[in-house]
Length: 84
Image (cartoon, rainbow, N blue to C red; front, side, top):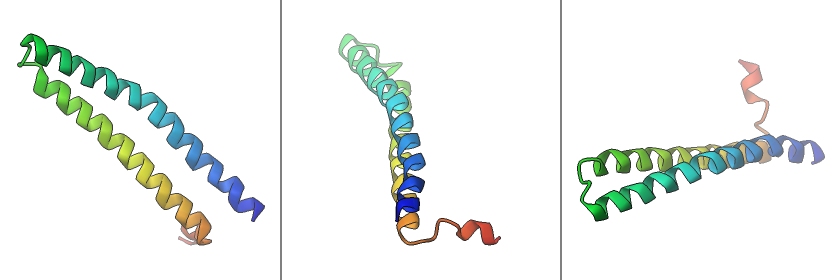
């Protein structure tokens, strides 16, 4: 059981680091899009919203992969890839 808990540390740490890096970037882009949208900078708004959506997709994907990896570790499948 101790070994499984150790194997869970890396996916959680990486997910936290990615979210901590991408989250503020998405927030800044969304904030800038809100400011430009309010001031009439409509030409930049779609690009900024696209960047914000891409960053959000990265966060969702990383959290999904982390959840899947933790389930694999709990199910004892952590070494399945080494068979191939």
